[in-house]
Amino acid sequence: MSASRVGRPHTQGITEDLLRAAERVMAEKGFSALTVDGLVSEVGTTRPTFYRRFSSTAHLALTVLQRRFGAGAQPDTGTLAGDLRAMQREEVAMLADPVMRNSIVGLLGAARTAPELSALYFSEFIRPRRDRVRRVIDAAVARGELESVDVDSDEISDLLIGPVLARALLPLGAPLDEHLADLTARSALLHLGVRTAD
Image 1 (cartoon, helix red, strand yellow):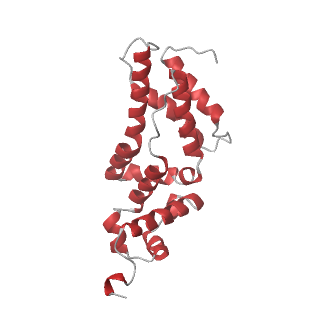
Image 2 (cartoon, rainbow, N blue to C red; image 1 turned 45 degrees about the horizontal axis):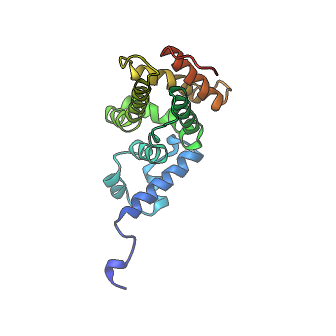
Image 3 (cartoon, one colour; image 1 turned 180 degrees about the vertical axis):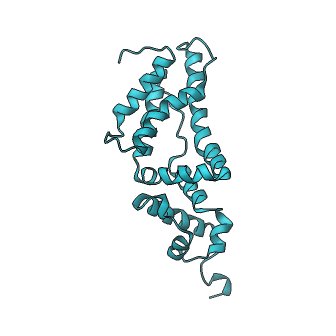
C-alpha cells in the first residue's frame, strides 16, 4: 500500500465525523457536554484539525443545527393562514427535536457572551427564518390577502417564535405540539388584521 493511502485522509470525512459526533452528543447530553477533547478522541483526530474546521464547539453546534434544520422550504399553501401554520409546525418540530431542545439553552448562553457567535447565529439561523416570513407576507400581499406591504415582518417573526421559544426554554410543563403552532399562527394573523374561519 502506498504511503498516500495510509491513515485517515485529510478530507471532508473528518469534518463529517466531527459533525456526526457532535450531533449525537447534543441529542443525548446537550450542548454543554460538547468538548473539543471528547470529540477529537471519539473521531480519532487532533485539536489542530478540529480548529482548522471550527472556531469553537459553539461554531460546530451551530453548523450541526443549520445542516439538520436549515430554514425550510418556502411554504405555498395558497393562503397566508396556511403558510404561517406550515412554518410554525416546522419550528415547533425543530424545537421539540432532542438535538435542539437539549442544546438551545447552552448555545444561546454562549452566544450572549461571544459577539462573533451571536452574529453567526443571527446570520445563519435567525435571518433566513425572518426572510422566509417576509416572503410569505409578500406573497399574501400579491394575492390580495393583505392590503399593504408596510408590514414589519421581523415583528411578525418575533410574535411567531416568542411563545414557541418560551415553551421550549421554560419548565412550563406544556407540550411543543401542533396546537401551539396553530395558536401562534392565529395570533400573528390577528395582529395582521386577518381573520380566519378556524
